[in-house]
Length: 96
Image (tube, rainbow, N blue to C red):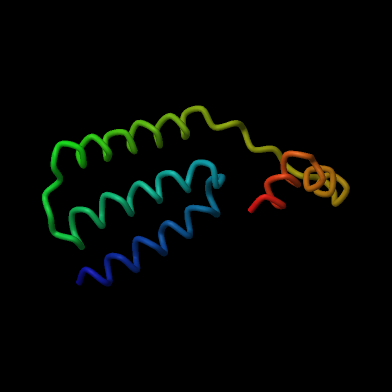
């Protein structure tokens, strides 16, 4: 039963990318994994710092979702190339 719930949850998380931008879906998906694994799979009670950590995850995810920039449409290949050759993106790709 639990495995079926996990599979359905992950399929729903994957399907959410079709309806919302990734900046909204990713933090909420990560949050659901944290809470689900802590309570259901590992079967342990959270202590004070665990509860504080989960609360901080909820606040952080909510902050990211509320302050997410609007998603813009990319019109051409030239625009994709311009975004891919920005210094910040290139530095990040070389660094990782």
